[in-house]
Image 1 (cartoon, rainbow, N blue to C red):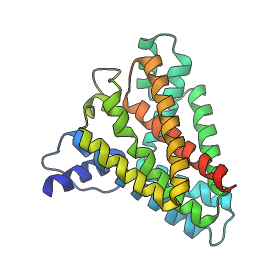
Image 2 (image 1 turned 90 degrees about the horizontal axis):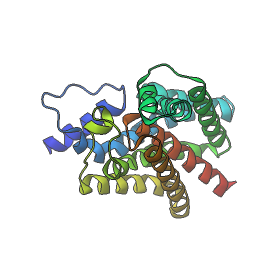
Image 3 (image 1 turned 30 degrees about the vertical axis):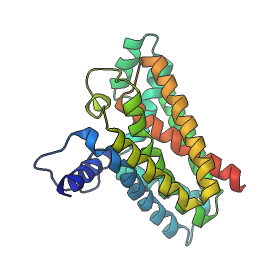
Image 4 (image 1 turned 120 degrees about the horizontal axis):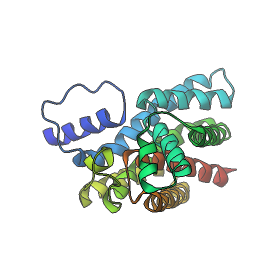
Length: 246
């Protein structure tokens, strides 16, 4: 039990800026992947609470933007940064080495600004057009399910370079991948069985498409690629849900 709690604590420390205490002996990063959906549900829950509070007096678009801002504050923009870096690297680099070099650059370029702006705008639009209760549930469900897919790609894709998060967290066990997947599915079922099937399929397809893109562009995954995959999967799930209920 102590190891399980330590793994969950490491996941919280890795994926958020929320207070998580200290670990005297940190477990291997790959052992924490089963808890990533739980962290996603927590981040989504924070966003949902902000959405609910804002909905008492603000229009849906403002509620959606405030909820997304709360999630960004909770994670430090970790995944959004990955999306922007991937857009800059894949769009601006002409060779694999140059793309990886751009991924390391903390500065954001025009491709990154465009990608980040479009994804955030689409997410806010989708949330604003869902019924408030469903939008709040979706924040939790997508937060968990989008992170539940990441261990799968850590296992299937090779690391694109010899260091970084993608290397440090590589090699999760089948059990860890399975538990993460089941937790993500359980979160999607909060939306109902049909919605869970539709959104889950959309998220998996979008995540797989981005995995294929990363494999062609840089030969595998990095921490930035994983962050971008979370953003892409989250957006795909929200758009699929909106199409289903709209």
